[in-house]
Figure 1 (cartoon, rainbow, N blue to C red):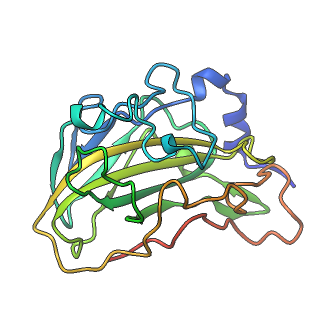
Figure 2: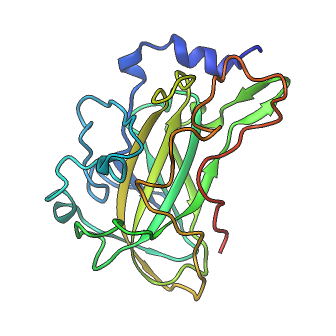
Amino acid sequence: MKASLAALAAVAVPLVAAHYTFPDFIVGSTISPDWQYIRETANHYSNGPVTSVTDPEFRCYELDLANTAGQTSTATVSAGSTIGFQANGPIYHPGYLSVYLSKATPEANSVQAGTAQTWFKVYEQKPVYENGALVFPSTTQQSFTFTLPKSLPSGQYLARVEQIALHVASTYGGAQFYIGCAQINVENGGSGTPGPLVSIPGVYTGYEPGILINIYNLPKNFTGYVAPGPAVWQG
C-alpha cells in the first residue's frame, strides 16, 4: 500500500542526521536550557535510539543510572498549565508520540522515582489514516506542548516523552524509541486518580500492532493505527 509523502521524506534523510534527543523542557512559553530539567540521556552525543523495551534504560535512558537524576533540577509547574518538550532538531522519523507521568517517590531527582507501577499516559499524537496511508503529524515538528489535567494531584513527578519511530519497524526490535524524562514539581493540583498505571519497562512487549508494523505496506484490512500502551488519562 502506498506510503505517505511525509514518511517517504523521512526515509530520504540521512540516518544520523535524522536521529534526535529531547533535551529541553517547556513550561508555558519558556524553553529551558539543554538538560536543565531533563535527565541527560546516554545518546546526548550520538542521538541514537533505544530499541529494547525490556532494558532499564528504556525508562529514561539516563547517561548514568546512579547519578544523573540527582544532577538534574526539578521544574515547578501548575496543574492545568502548559508543558512540553523540544528536540535538538526536527523529529524526522515517522512515528507515534506520547507523554507519560509517574508520581515520584521519594522525589523526582531520586534514583527510585518511576521504578514501580506508577506510570500513566497524559498525551499522545497518533498517526492519522488517510487515503490508504498513514500521515504522521510529529514529522512536521521540533517541539510540542500540551495541557496538564487540572485534577492532577500536587506532588513531584517524572514526565517522560517517548517518540516511537516506525520507519524500520516491520521486524521485531526495529522500532526506535526516542526518550527523555523531565523532573517536575506540580503545584495547585486537584484530587484526580490517574490511571491506568503501568510499569516502564514492562508497558510493552514489542509485539504490539502499533510497534511491530510495516508502515509502507499496510495490511489489506487495516483500519487505523492502534496506539500501544494504556489509554490517555484525561483527568
